[in-house]
Image (cartoon, rainbow, N blue to C red; front, side):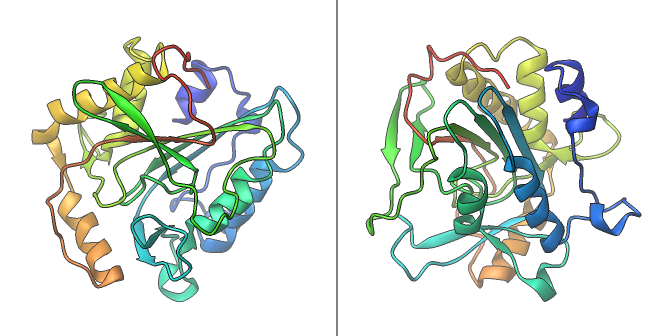
Length: 259
């Protein structure tokens, strides 16, 4: 993803902050505190004309929501490296940190490659698209009336799967090591020129994952993690379909995709 941002979209390398388990710098390890600080860092001081990107590839889960803010009754969560001792990062916090502050003229794209990631940013609109490409925008605004939009800016999120699905890994990208299937499909859509509009992008990602289902592995492991964390069950299998959510609805087949 870093290579794509620098070489395809001309992001300065100095503008990219990476947190990985391989880091020796304790401030660059994806702990709960460091991920929180990275989210604050990303949006702090943003100005009109800025384009921001947040990419997460790792474990995601769900937990019961008791405030009535979720359509399905569950909050989505990111699992930091130290979640067993520090807890998870809940979608309400992600929304408050990275969505609500975005001012007019600023654009944020989130790419969330994790289980249960469909509405990980708690954005108010979800693009419900069927396999023929027809779609409607579902309003996921909380019944309580709590505002989940921005401060005038635009936020669009691609996620690895729906809230009740799991995201798997694939070795198709490097043929050597596994990477998130969603991340692979996102990069491939751009590199193959299938990312003209947001609708094209979403369709291409879903097609790639369906075609590579035989190469996708690790979904059972990721699903099992979710089952252990939530006390749920594996349920409806491991099939995943990337999702698109946004701060405001738009025509996905006319709006051009760019980071």
